[in-house]
Image (cartoon, rainbow, N blue to C red; front, side):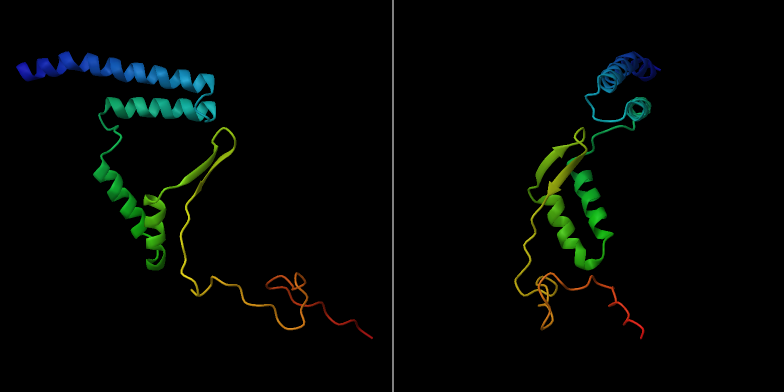
Length: 145
């Protein structure tokens, strides 16, 4: 019985913190500092408060983040997994902003020289540079006489 009383005594403090965070989130939605559309932001703030009240909202542990990363990469075809892991763990250059219309994340992956698909084939003999037909395009039919 004492444990139940202690849990109830601690609950108002926890709920007050959750409510305070919700109010901060709502204020950020209203002043536009989140970069999200306002109704979506308000919906997210409400969902976060609801999950926090259910004690199901957390930032996760480092181990959970690592496992999530590995699970995402392991779903890819075998020849793409290493590049995925590199993108998840290597330094990334970030440009742009959500408010500006998009965020570009750039990761450089070195490809060994001579790897198939890294060097475009030379143009066919007699073709002028830049004058090749687009892939899949057939030459025009011969005029009828």
